[in-house]
Amino acid sequence: MKELIFKVNINDINQRLDTYVASLDAVLSRSIAQRLIKEKKVTVNGKNIKESYKVKENDEIKIILDEPKETSIKAENIKLDIVYEDEYIVVVNKPKGMVVHPGNGNTEGTLVNAVLNHCKGTLSGIGGEIRPGIVHRLDKDTSGLIIVAKCDEAHIKISEQIKNHEVTKIYTALVKGNIAEDNATIDMPIGRSKQDRKKMEVRKDGKSAISHIEVIKRYGNYTLLKVKIDTGRTHQIRVHLAKIGHPVVGDEVYSSGKNDFNVKGQMLHSTILEFTHPITNKKLHLEAELPEYFKTVLNQLDLAVN
Image (cartoon, rainbow, N blue to C red; front, side, top):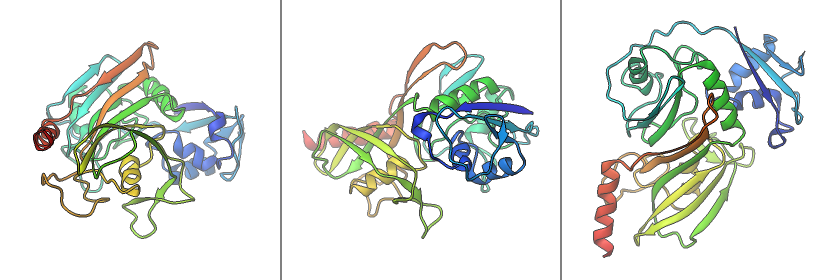
């Protein structure tokens, strides 16, 4: 059994208990949270509470997780771009096109397959059988920095930092159109689309989602952006930018029409991660260069405007 303990902060008050538990970690869905509550594996201040309970500031939430089954995922010798590594965590510059973990028919070629091989199977077990070590996610066609935990303590502490908005995540995006403002904040809640369950959308009853954008360079019909996110909702940056009329170039889900570069998959890169090391408490600032295809597109745009 593994025991996770969280303290509710002021930003999360009045959420339903099942919603709060589901938001604590990338691997906990609401259905899993509801099952854990019904099985009396979630307590609030030492007591079993209904899933509809509205959490209060400083409530102590304790979650008991079963020991994960030994993973059946195959370790694969796939080359990784390691940006940082020690005995507790590894930070990878994930390439575009790589799925983070197995699922929906993708059993091979994922980041998990690669990291299992690299770490010789030594990864946090909190994510369960198919997501060992995975603390947060990147979409398949979003490249850049992602943290993988090698031990449970590191996993729990990084999850807490993410939950408390203490991890700085900065992305680089090339979008369609000319954004007039140099800086802007997009504060629009995001939820799953009722028309297409594979898509997300801005909706009033969605979860809070905040993205800060800053123009790096304008290229006439395109704009290069720095995007800092306060929250990490599924497809957040892609949905927000599409909603304001500036979808990410190459986004095959939230952008209509072709782009001038025949790029497939969104031009979105996780460029900077800043967080406190979960064990040593050292402040880490990590950066990943843009992928070569991204640089090539920007060079073409530079030539066109100069």
